Image 1 (cartoon, one colour):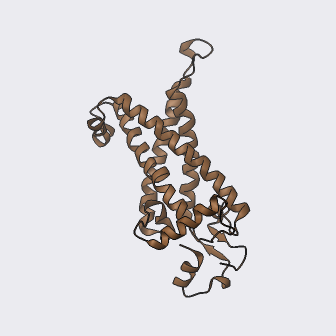
Image 2 (cartoon, one colour):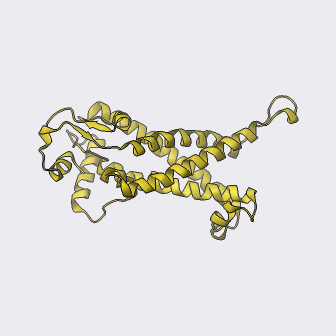
Length: 237
């Protein structure tokens, strides 16, 4: 949604409003909790998949990998709880809270705006467009590269946890069906590991794009996820 579309819906002119409240507090809290959880999960998950060859001292005095597993499981549970709350807020929050969960494939206007964003990011367009929420390229990228992988990682992660908790555990009752799709749990480990890299690649691109837009476009990006407001730096389209 562009700034003019958002303002027109409220019966105002874009040039009369330079600050727009976009991201509500629950969305911003989820964003930063998510960032810390994903960082913790990636670091501990990497070493769980590729353990340290040795640790100093007697084995009885070391519980390093046990602590890593605990941190991994704790961060995964935090991620899952906040993901459920984020889904809830998509229904009760503003229109921008729903953007990461769908893509308007049916809209010709969306694809026209998407093409302009592709041209802007490939340095073929001279000026960026201003958007209140996510631009079309970000919206199209986030669904397959972030939102859906998050659900996949939570599902496969709890399935792997349930394997150790036992067949009579609540986790297995909720996520044991995953083993009906992949009976060999090593396959689930592999896909879970690959999912980590999909999200990490997205995170790296996401950080680059956010910094780039803050510098090159006429709108705030990084500070918007702190204050909730998007600042437009001029009155142009």
